[in-house]
Length: 218
Ligand SMILES: [Ca+2]
Image (cartoon, rainbow, N blue to C red; front, top):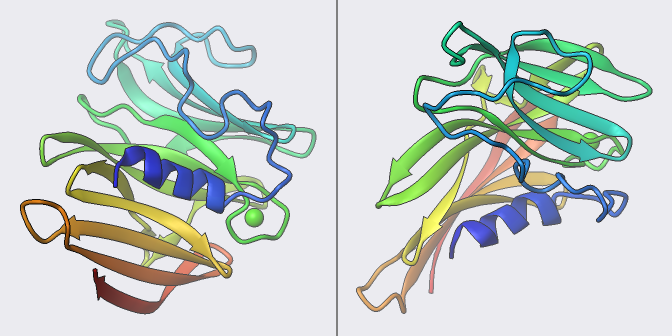
């Protein structure tokens, strides 16, 4: 149970067949991102971005491209973050309320979570530390009118955690039109007994409604 598993669950199982294998950045953070949390930002080279933009990551799906980028201060550090979605249909550029001095947001990938044929967008909004391993929190953005709107539950963006070590992991999957948040935890020192919890949500446009919660032991 590791981060590879949960990433596959997020970006594989939630994707429809039309997501192209050739989309180099779909399914993962941009491999060429030349910055680290808390570090200096390289200036943006992508066309159409402000002159003070930097720390750019991208994801693509079909003809759509999502950029996550920062507006930089005079020390090449982020002072705010933005999302930009471009395609034949969309030209959206808006604030992204995420990020801190030690946690820089990134574009992660695209998948059609609700099965309506339109892409939704995974964005890492926070880095977490747990069990000595990197952990991350994602939000899922839907394209609504001329905006990117995060999937929400209880009036807040739904936190979708992923990460893992040999005996504990979190992730998500799509199952029968629902988004399911997963957590698995070993119950003995040899990792031969596990408890897996599943919290299932129905998707109503951009609202995630809790529908069931189960816990199984194996
Ligand atoms: Ca969709």
